[in-house]
Image (cartoon, rainbow, N blue to C red; front, side, top):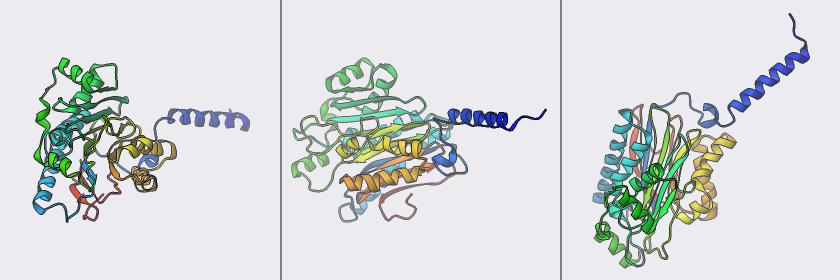
Length: 340
């Protein structure tokens, strides 16, 4: 039996409407990243962005940073390659960097104006948009684990100061005396009131074999900060964001700009609503919007197909990546071969 042209038109239009509704919250591969195949897993890390250069980073310190980045990257790679979750990879990788005094997080956190270490961290699960954060903590050895515990074991997203410490104690996390975070290098930076940028943060974004994304960020904030200042790292959508439909993002830099421009979520939104690729969206936000606003720093991102982007507008950014197809590397400066 032949259908009339008008009835056929209605059927086709209905089908297109249904398809449109079904895909409303999920971009096509072409829209999302322009890639033809999906990585089984991917990981990208950062150890802070700033004014590092060959002049102020000695060859010995350069080697130490690259080794530390490689160790952290390998730990995350192992978890993902063995079928572990993106959340586990992100948390454990950041924990390693929190324990390494080279970085501005945990043991190596910078000092406030009053000579304290005040730590912030956040983690986000791209599969359900669950998130957890702590801010202004002074005695939790690994703030990133505290952030994950807030996400999984409380009805809240962010806890701060003494309340966050009390929650961590009740959850059985490792509490240390504030002196644990002291390092001569960071204390001397405070005394000298460095003229160069010292906003370094650590972060990790991961995609696992199940297709889930996660982002984690941890920081000691800015050298000489006052009044319990909190930056972008623990603020969901500013310094940390993950959404399985688009990407995972961890930021580092001048936090006030990343907060005001909601940098991490903006990258995701540009992908979701404008159909930009990960590279297009992250480059637009970091090297156009932030530059025009006067904000310095960078981001690391991975999308749902395992594409990686690591743009920054400062002189350098400690960073590294690895993907299931065997591509990997660690970098510091802008002009390094193989930079992605």
